[in-house]
Length: 514
Length: 125
Image (cartoon, rainbow over all chains, first blue to last red; front, side):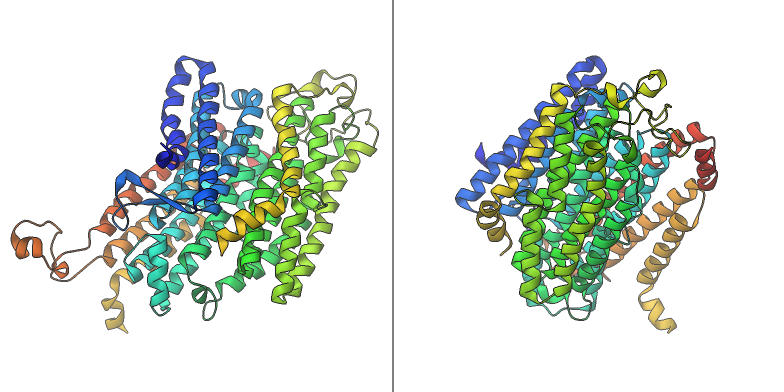
């Protein structure tokens, strides 16, 4: 039984992604229940795998009993077990929390919606666990296809955003596949560990370098690394709220993880510096991305778009860690993958909760909401503090380790940019908190023409403003239990992750990367 | 120069198809043409993998008494793995194209056009 754990992590969502739509056709209510049960199975299997890795070290699972190099293997080490647990548990909380909105947004076809969610999860966990280059491509495309469809159902504006996401995402996948082709023809294997051994023995040839460039470009497109980020803000802004709370925390993070995996298990260090300095390129793009994302976020008035640009900045932070390449920097990048999944899920869920309670989406309309939705906005505040990086929340420690890694390497510009990014993050998130907690509620939400999202219309699922004679914010009430409980748990997780960061770093992440 | 191109003809063809596909996806306003560009782009990669597995004078990798049976020389056979990979890649490509085309159907029903610029104009109204 314990031998088969990895099969449950990926297999359960994959199997039920087909069954749930069929069930949902006949019994509408069953779709949600079965989907949550499936995600829970996947989460428990991930947790047990992590326990097992911590006990007995890395273990492998051969699909169908075929050992590599003939078969495909799943490699469960500290890093993949942690990321898999984060992906599944964050998904579990988000799926439970977004139930009320999901059915409305999915056009009354919950079966199809939850089928896609499970397909997304199967793809993401597959990317995390697989030890095979081509298998990673297949799972990457499975996850992406589910994500395109989920973004697309968000209505009129989401259609174009979803289509563009599909085109750009597919270019990314195709580039990755092309790169894998170069690696395969150079080494004759698709197994990551075997490829690394063969590459270490061989001289660094032009073909392998070209392959590496293609792979990193492809994954860069998928993880929205500046300047390949153009699809992300539109997709996150216009996607249904139940969807962007799900894909924003996990989707791009898993692409970042895949990039990290290339560093850890495929390319020997010598291949990524020297003639084709991929590591340095990642470092530079990351540093630019941190500043660009934060500055762009500060200029947004729609919270979802602001959070989308903030995601670009945080992903660039992860790229900086990969670019530095020391064990400490890689562990810091991984810690940030974990932290950011929790922080972003908190922020997006709180935003979605506000949107469905009050129908407001613009930052300047949220004045006075703090006392009226204390739990939702409290979680938002904790998430914001963690994003800025104030101890003891999680965000502080990944930045702290990154600064340390920068000092060790003598890269003072990394230190400067990371500190600057905290300041810029504070600018845009505290602007929201100021409105929420310190300003009195406005008599009327300003419904100018540019406020299309906040005006009653087809995009506002809760057209309160239409009937509102009293100010909207004054009538706001706390979200129901099944919405705020997962939200508060996620908010608490950002603090717990911060408090226990030393344990996570020393026992899990640092052994995983060295 | 010509010899060099001829010797590596599949690679040049791959490069040309990649560029054509990219142009279709980025340079065209029509969403249908963008999907066509995507298909060309993916075909280029299939061509690349298949041409990489070519071996002059080799045959199908079926052990059938010929070529010495079980003591077969690998040089007599074409590498079957890239072909198998490309079968999977074709399936993935079909899935992507299918999803893209179903998007186009929905978009056309909603906007009455498949021209990106007209869609943007429509959205500003």
